Image (cartoon, rainbow, N blue to C red; front, side, top):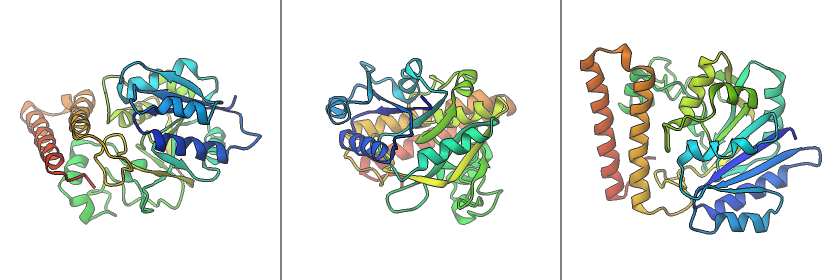
Length: 301
């Protein structure tokens, strides 16, 4: 077995089936892949439908919604390959992106994490597939809108990294968990997904730990997937499924909590108390603003 693909799914039945279809349509006879679907206590019959349509998958049921980090970790004891691909269920694999990504990663033992080009349904880039870390300064530039005004500036666009050439493969600080390929030895070293995070921010933490462990992370431009972003949370316009408002509200709260967790883990001690309070207060204001938008029916993007 050369690759274990882990797909954590929550109430996106049709999207999950489309994702699996795209995987097996693009899999060749030479590819030795293990495909694991972890169902995070869906209520739409996702896992049963997936097993009927694709009996070759390995199906796991968590029993309750464990969140993204713990849900993915649930599959780790079952992996059989030396390389793992964490793949979101609301994605469509295009062509041989998995094979090319795997080939590129295996050429360099210093690569600890790799993501490919992730496009939204309109063909635009999902910025989170190649970005910087959300330091307090980078976050301020992003949420103030200055990164949009100056997308090619390394100063103002440190988080969204609009200055990078996405037509070429390059080293990055951080990608996302939508398509995350990682050697098993690296996952073992960093302890896999940090379960302090429930939903959101855990991919940033993963990349941070990979870099701290001395490995490099890469954006691979030689292939792509399509991401119907927000289909489980309902927070993005690119979502392909209707999500109950209470789910979106809970997800927005988890996103804000993820910001607090990341700041406290990595930057809290670097600032005097007054700045700590200001930063955490800003996160609370952002959380309230996002909850208000959900209440009136406005999505993030």
